[in-house]
Image (cartoon, rainbow, N blue to C red; front, side, top):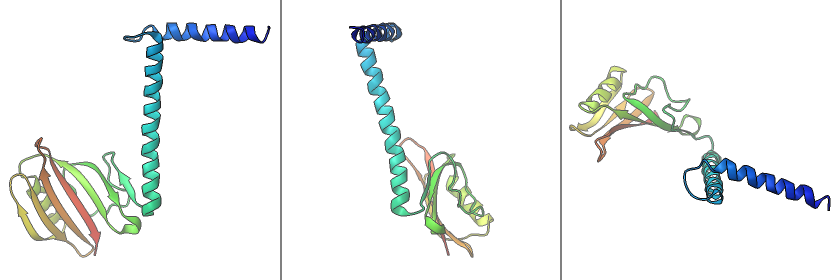
Length: 167
């Protein structure tokens, strides 16, 4: 009987804590709120776990690929490549095989500005074509080729994609 009594007291205490702790929740019974909280916690853990698993899988499969989505360029991105706009993220191939960086541009002459920055850094243009909302061009230096494309989405957001490969 003594073993049963502590379990009963513990269960009652837990029920009391759960009932009073969840009574401040927005709607539903305390049990509904507990279940909702547990489900949300499980979803958060699952999503976080999937994100880490995907990053690990990409690294394992592609051997040394670096991905960024936090407003920074990959750590190995060549400093001599001028970027315009706000960096959104990018990727780097293994062992300097190549890089991709995406930036958000302010409208207007965004392609012209990005192209001028590359030319100002010593990159020669080839196959350049643009209009008010988009553009493409290949830019080369002794060390790198940069394929620059600028596009505007349906919401009017203009982005530039820089694909950089060593020469």
